Amino acid sequence: MARPRSIYACSHCGAQHPRWLGRCTECGQWNTVAEEAAAAPAVEGLAAPAGVGAKPRSLDEIEAAARPRFATGIEELDRVLGGGLVPGAVVLLGGEPGVGKSTLALQLAARRERAGGPVLYVSGEESPEQVRLRADRLPETPGGIRILAETRVEALVDPWRELQPALVIVDSVQTLQTARLESAPGSVSQVRECAAALAAIAKTHHTALVLVGHVTKEGTLAGPRVLEHLVDVVLAFEGERGHPFRLLRAHKNRFGSTQEIGVFQMAATGLEQVENPSELFLAERRGGAPGSCIVPLQEGTRPLLVEVQALVAPSPYGTPRRTTLGVEDARVALLLAVLDRRSDVDLLSRDVYVNATGGVRVGEPSSDLAVALAIASSRLDCALPADAAACGEVGLGGEIRRVPHLELRAKEAARLGFTRLLAPASQCDATPPPPGLALVPVADLGEALAWLRRAGVDTAS
Image 1 (tube, rainbow, N blue to C red):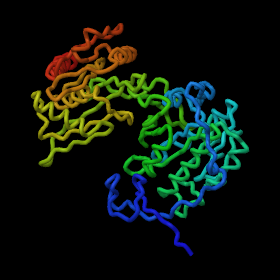
Image 2: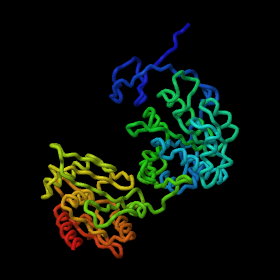
Image 3: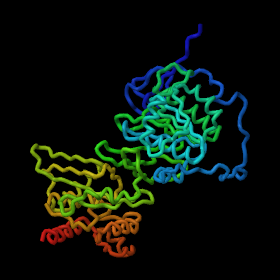
Image 4: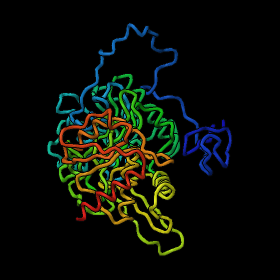
């Protein structure tokens, strides 16, 4: 009897090796290579027969409008996707447990079913009764959705072929398994083979496929990295348990931009769309408090106002602490070094805490000036005016560099009642300010701190 052939695959990146290695040569991770059984021949219905394939066609003969994308019915989701779902596209939706992935998937199924397209919802974690209990909390019960509680990929072929759905949702891809492999569900080989088989069926039937995926402790999507290369769109659903806001970002999108962001609010009846997130993020802001600064961010085509808070306190130990939430650690360390070298603000023996309120993650370099002003405001105990905001990138020499879309940022700040916006001096002359808002040009960090001291005295008086 022939010995079953086996391979050695990395659980981190999915790379295959002819023998066991202590360290993966592709990703460099230690103790991630494990032995797995090789894949068996393909099951009928999951792959095309040998010798059968599509004929090549000229690109001029292909009509892009033959299968146009369709709207999901959720405007925030359509914004991130680039206008809706594309037939035959594979979307990977990832997020931490409890963030609302299944709720968003069920609301997507309800909207699509109401629009007239058949929907197949494959549940590998919950029974149909549990899915119905979760659906009863939604404002519109998706009664016409076809529910299939199944974890075997081979069992999805016949219902898929009979129903011919416009949308298929699999919750979650880590629970699926195929008879071609002997490994347990959730392993690297199972996730890779199951996702590849489902993607092949979706493209054959021109069905939009949404795969719900788990997230590891490091915040990355569970499973091999090859899974992200296999799909067309990778969506990340982010949110803090203590905050009702949920942010939807596109880390990869073959049919649209990856700069857009969708904002939702978790409520008792499911996820609610936030049409004006700036007002909600600033609803609990207390004006006149030291260590607070408003920064207008630009997420794709949407300007977003976020409050950045900083607290500078005496360090009881020899080594001061630097703690950040929602802001990159390396960016804060850079700004602290610039403040120490290019200004008279003493921070060497102080603990510094920086936080972006509302559970938002601030990664734009245009937020440098606001973060620096918030830190200096807390250290000097000098509050910024309640009607002032700031944006600008801070260089290592202390200069304030240009930011993109300054006019859109200024309009959003003026719409919410701000009358002054600190901006790079090189852009203020060429940017017409909106009515009711004045641009305050600052060329370097020293000018910004001098303005803070003057404005702080006026505010205190």
